[in-house]
Length: 354
Image 1 (cartoon, helix red, strand yellow):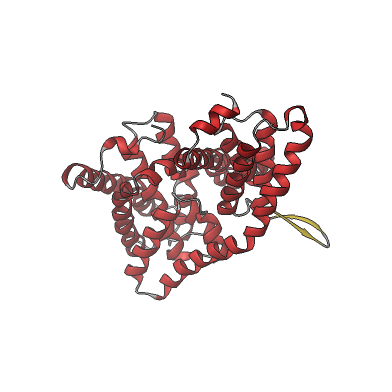
Image 2 (tube, rainbow, N blue to C red):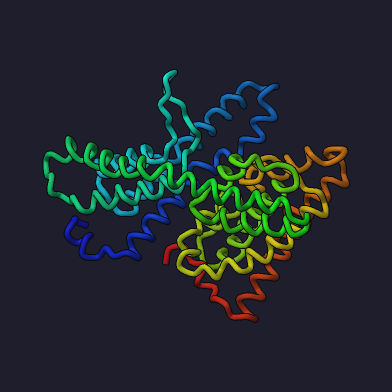
């Protein structure tokens, strides 16, 4: 497809879908390896050094998320190689993943995913505007133009976007002062929605040092979103995509959610119930487990670690019910209720890429 045809067919909806779908792919590719292997590798590393190396590898992949997001978004636009690497580089610049200090360069994890999204979108826009005007000079000039313009916009926006991310975290943190049951509901519901947005639940939980029952409730909110997106989408999406939403991250369904936000209703209802269970069964965790749900067994492993007696038969049974059996039972019930009885949406509304 040449640039002229691409411009003719490009509109706000198509542009937004490309950006959101690319965001989801980049996040899944970067976070799933760490989610699946990090806890296992961390537990086995003291005994078998090879698992320490594997832990470093999946951590590096996670830190590369801004580059992966930029690449995935550029591929959605069917850009050529020089355009793809230009968008990827600009996205990494705007992510804020690197900080320059007097002692050298510091890596700040994945940076800010919201700002990565905005920067990558700006970079894609710059590429579309330039089109093929540079002709043979594109390899020389395009990376510089895209990185300086879009990357510069991203760096300018970064402090403001970080304040917004922190404000979201503080809003969740303010729930902690409320009654425990209400707090569990609010935190679980908040995280069930945040996990399917461009905002990083891990970043928020880490920023406000979320731990204890608050972390457990947030963790179960992520579980509710993963289960809800799997149950709703498994009959209309490829099984691999549905399993990625369940075992990896439900962010992969972000495009479908933007098109039809009401499909989040059963997720929110399920999260509210699981938030209550987090308080009743004293499900606790760390900032990391609050963001990963049961991906890679991060949530269950941390929950067991904080339970009195550790991995006893009773505690294992509680974890099985709270993390797997009950989320699926309530998830199926609420999805069936909202779709077939309340007629809030149709099954086809879960299609990720219509």
